[in-house]
Image (cartoon, rainbow, N blue to C red):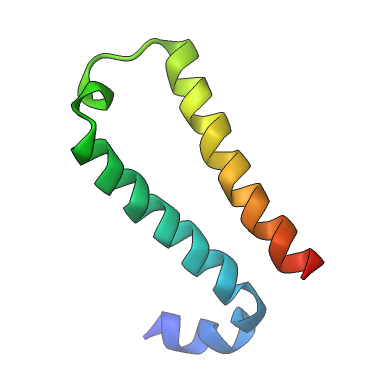
Length: 67
């Protein structure tokens, strides 16, 4: 119910929320396809994955704002 009332206020943020949701689902799908991501990862590997995820989000935002 709260989401229904917030939708009007968050209308401008909807594309970013959807992009973040889509990126999360894509990450889950890729993690299932690449079993190596399920192993114990080091902090450096986790930071590299986070950096690449943020770079992807930044690329989407750049093309959305620039286009």
